[in-house]
Length: 232
Ligand code: F6R
Figure (tube, rainbow, N blue to C red):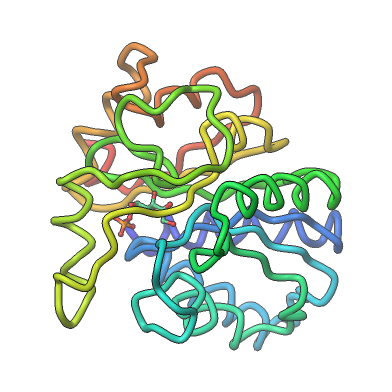
């Protein structure tokens, strides 16, 4: 069930931190991750899981939302995870959706990941259109961090998280598929019936830029964790 899937991913992350306390951890946002982050915060509180030396890089951020906006991914991460664990805020990185020069900001983000030695473990969710990060259909499978116009289906699903759906930005900065594939290991978490069809395509279908998650079939160390509904 969903609980078991989230606990398994939390255990994978906790083990990785225990093995390498200065882990470089790639993070995702979205509804699926809320329960996982609650579990990680609980493991910090009750079992002393120590994030003090971890560095984190989020997959994506909306363009044009200030960090204090409740719809921004920085706000989401502070609220659901960073404020509830012992991570140093200076070691938490998200793309800068307010950068005056978006292109330069994207290059700087890639540079920062490289400076930290690359991502050890990248956490992913999957969108109904098969996106990982915000790599919407027809994203190049070797793309790097860049700005991306969001798909209509993504706008429809994600705008419900905004008090006023019209406030949802139509573009975002996202790590590229190539950036994600560079991570030394990857774990994708998908739960619920709404993900069953796209999980089947990503895992068993042809590798195609129409379903960017299918590129994970090329990854040497990728785990897909699903509940029974998403595995259906
Ligand atoms: C978010 C992200 C997205 C989500 C995906 C699923 O940082 O990268 O790819 O993982 O849209 O979102 P939920 O979990 O809300 O279904």
